Structure formats: structure tokens, C-alpha cells
Image (cartoon, rainbow, N blue to C red; front, side, top):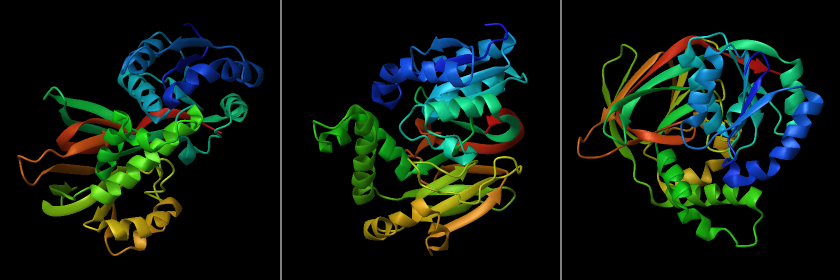
Length: 317
């Protein structure tokens, strides 16, 4: 892998559209960025190991080509390698939320130029421990947003294919993912029940909360352009904790535009705080509360979220 930048491509991202678009993306990258090597992921977690191996072998710039999940995996691999390797982003996914926070275009040619002309900035990450689906305690890093509540049900519905039944059969593939995610969001909003959790923020006493959604945000956007943490800064040594309380379906639906505009913090059901650590567990041990990190459901509570200042070098435009 040597000194040439490595592009890690997830061909399955955007419902498989990335595999179809890769020749055009590669052409734009060669034209507007220059030479590179490439590796394709074959399974979940593969991008993480590819990135870690490349970083340890001295690759200075490792570019994630895929959605937020792929970007997060590559970031995890770099952080775990404990090297000075830099993360670059070539967006090709459905949500494309993290790239919004750093100002990367969704256009491949413009993103390639940003990779060539951009500068490295060091950002924070969030170290998260949780119980994975094997029942074991696991640790990962989140660079975008981690959450529990409605978001995990939306992701589970979208992944199961249940929401795709609502998408017309003639819909182009590049729109299918977006529309099925929107359908999953609507279905969840109409049917989800709030989660009862016990939460400890920094040194404050543990509190019992009833939440529709609880977010630990390092960056500003999640859920396909929802501006959940409009004031979040990637390098301030804190994450933003945004809680949406026990709001009913009608209230959530009628205020949905506020989430996309970042105007929801003024709602009476919403609280916002800056923190360095959050510890959360279910109020009822028999009730499973699922956790998602950077757009992927990874397991369940109990979880601990801790800020890691200056954890990762990222190429900004």
C-alpha cells in the first residue's frame, strides 16, 4: 500500500448503487485528485480492519468511499491503529450525514478536489461501550452521532426491508434507500413507544428519563440530514447531548421540519447540554434498549459514552 493514498470502497453502500457508480467515481478521483490504490470491502467490519492495516503500514491518507457506516468503520480502524494517518471522505452512501458537518460535497468531482486541496484538522471522537448482539461488552468510536430511542427502530425497519414495501417498484435504485428510510421514519413515529432509561451525565446524579430519542452528538447531522445538534463542534472537547422527551406522534410529526432546520431545541420536550461522559442503562432490566452509532445499530444498553479529544485527523475542504 506504500505511500499512495488508499481508497476503501464499500460496493454495497447506497443499496448497491456504489458498485455501479465506482468506475465514474474512480475516473473523477484520478482526474481531480491523482493516483491512489483501492480496496473493496467484503463484509461488515472489513473497512475497519483494512484501514487499521493500511495505517500501520504507513499509508498517510485513507479515503472512505461509502456511507456514514463505512466512514465510521474507517475512522475506527485509524483511531485503533494509533497512527497519524488521515481520514479522507468520498461520499457515496444514503444518509451522507457526517460529510455535511465538514462541508464535503456529495458530488464526486468536487469531493475529489477537496481531497487534493484540503487541509487536515484534528477532531474529537466518542468512545462508546455497549452490549453487542452476542451479549458481550464491546467498545467502538463514534465520530458522528450515537443514539437510542426511535432512531434504532427506524434503522431496524429500513434494514429489514419492511419499509421498502411502501416504495413504488419503478423507483430508481439511488432513490429507493432514501424513500424506504423516509417510510421507516414515518412508520416508527406513528408506532414507537418511549424508552424509560436511567442516565448519568458527567458528575450529576443519575436521573430517570422517559425519552422518544436520546442523542450523543459529536457532529451536527444524523438520520438523513436532520440537524439534531445545530451547535455541535467537532473539536471542542465536548459532545452535545440532545434529548427528545415523551412527545406524542402528532407532536413529533408536526414538528419534524424543525429537526431538519435545527430549530427543535426551543421545543418544550427537548433538552440540550454539553458533556464529556454519559452513562445510560434501561430503567427496566427486562426491557431492551437498542443503541446505534453513526447510522448502524450495534447492540444495546447499558452504554458509556466518553469524549476523546483530538482523536482523529480528517481532511477538510
